Length: 117
Length: 117
Image 1: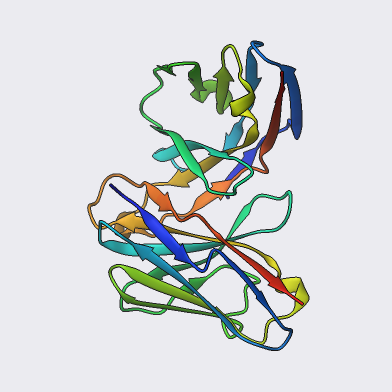
Image 2: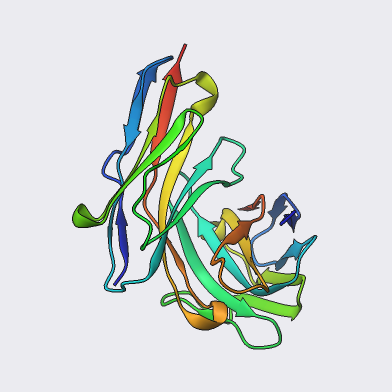
């Protein structure tokens, strides 16, 4: 069965600090997708990144970077020089690739990040 | 592109009444739509998967007679909470998967906050 674990429930940092959000997943499939979403207080989910299981290259997008390590089943997310606007709940999610579009997204419990000025 | 809307954004209803929530893909056709529920400070839990023109597939523990899902067209799915009770109060989020295959990406609506009094 699929499972996503975000061990950090809440993290609090001071502005400009770097912060890493951990995500560990479990799946039996060889083909799968990993996602990160941001959920600000308004509630709307904001898509951040999708990674497929065959692409282990790390990715950087501005202040955001992701480290995908299949050997440890981890897909960690780092925010560099954090800002107050980064305060939100961040969810890691896993989707197994299935034909027909019936794949499900399994979410971790989320990490609440608070960036203090 | 890839915008999903939900209506209403907030609804308050009395115990015992039914509430309908609409999920629309505005600029693409969605073969599959997903309905999630999120209780306060918790993760998103998949309730059901609906494919256009066929019956929805419900997750274990979700009452199909209580949460009626209709996916009548490629741009509209509805969730009706029948005989709502206070414990049904939650944040309901839909997502839609585009008709093109291979992306495995779900586009999320802004959510509907249901309060049952």
